[in-house]
Amino acid sequence: MRRRRSVTTLLAAVLLGLSSLALGTGPAHAAGEPTLTADPLSTWQTDGVVWALAHAGGVVYVGGTFDHIRPPGAPAGTDELPRENFAAFDAVTGEPLPCAPRFTGGSGTVRALKASPDGSLLFIGGSFGNAGGVGRSNTAALRTADCTVDPAWKPVVSSTVRAIDVTDTTVYIGGQFSTVQGQTRTRVAALTYSGGLLPFNVTVEGSSISNDPTPGINAITVAPRYNKVIIGGRFTSVNGSLLNSVHGLVGLDATTGRITNTFTGWIPRRSAVKALVNDGTNFYLGAEGTGGGVFDGRAAGRLSDGAMLWKDTCLGATQAVVPHQGVLYSGSHAHDCGQTPGGFPEHNNRQHLLAQSIADKTILPWFPDTNDGIGEQIGPRAMVMADGILWTGGEFTTVNEQPQQGLTRFAAEPDTGAPQVPLMSGAPGTRPGEIILSWKASWDRDDGVLTYRIHRDGVYLTSIEKESRYWDRPTMTFTDTVEPGSTHRYSLEVTDGTNLSGRNGPVYVTAPDAR
Image 1 (cartoon, rainbow, N blue to C red):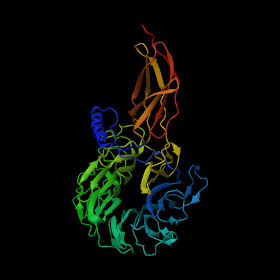
Image 2 (cartoon, rainbow, N blue to C red):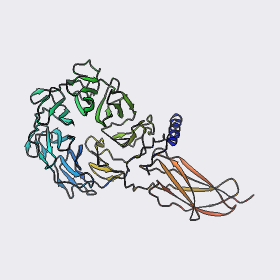
Image 3 (cartoon, one colour):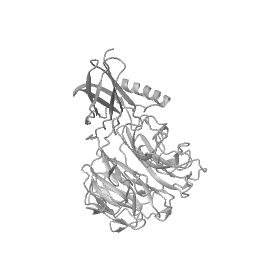
Image 4 (cartoon, helix red, strand yellow):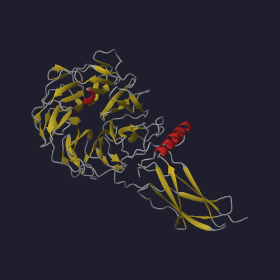
């Protein structure tokens, strides 16, 4: 049960969490924001990688590099429907829809999707030369009402489009291109809904990644209220700025392309921004890096003035971020969050999905997981919130250790996963009539505090609450006092407030006799 805490409890949690961090023991306490459940909804699958997700009018659109989709639970190659790099699903039921234009030519991949604010158009980017049977150059627009390719939107873009954001009047695209409509536009451009090129002109140069010398834009987020566009990627110079004065992230005037925010020091050398999104007040980013001293995690900033609100220290490249009801959900392959409140130390098991408090970056107890999967073996690549359901796509082939490829979904309910009941042992105490029970704390994917219910001789005896995480399961004990010399049987069950595990045991213990 993901319950919100009172102000008094929150203050206690913060103080206890700080103490925990200082001592290096136990997890910091969560800030109290309720999360989605960690139990995935039944979801169709792809036979390849999902790179992009968008939501409009009750439909979730999926773009990537795949040839087919198949039902939930279906093994690879069975019960497939043809879908070439693009598919559409009912946002709530998850059922596939007949909207299925093929995207072919080029590298045959869709890398970016974004709906217009009114939902009437879906703008699509990637590496393709044909969209739904119509010739297009790495970008296209789909009329969502009838799933037809919009005849007006047909700009010629010289190379892959990897990022799109849209206002009521303007479409911003980013990627690896050098010309749009035959005119110089290096990695970012702005166009009208009819495909006309706008004066917005930005020169993006230099690569922040040593093993990939080509500069590029991976993410764009637009804030019309502030006439601002924020772009992220791998670059070290914008509009002729000195080398490394602008690194991987920059704020631009949405009309002219003039630099408004340099975000100095946000993105270190050997790191690049992979994801950007805003909620109208703040913006959020995810980054990845190569080598030592990189930034691989998430950061939050204020749209109005570009001030940093917080930045975490997790390692494990972040590919997607989505804010929802005070929580920032992200896809990565985090393996060390030891210096971030609520985080885990370095370990071999990557955690691919995380939730953090937007208020203070605390990692919340929400730990559904995927595997690394296929391709580059990154795991999750894209996220979108649709009608209260978090859709996640990527390279993964399992979710919560069960087969599931390319797509998965999480909602606020139902919470169906009961924590596993731990093995309990019992022993006589040192005093007459004393019995000591002990067990290792369990853990739950979406609840930080669990309740342990102890039964004696088949009758409920007492309950104990304890906070735990999968990397921090403390030993728990309970001391019972009974008639000296008597023998009793004990069992234990665990609840997250919604789901109750089965009972373990019984454990039989004889209390010390009176001396």
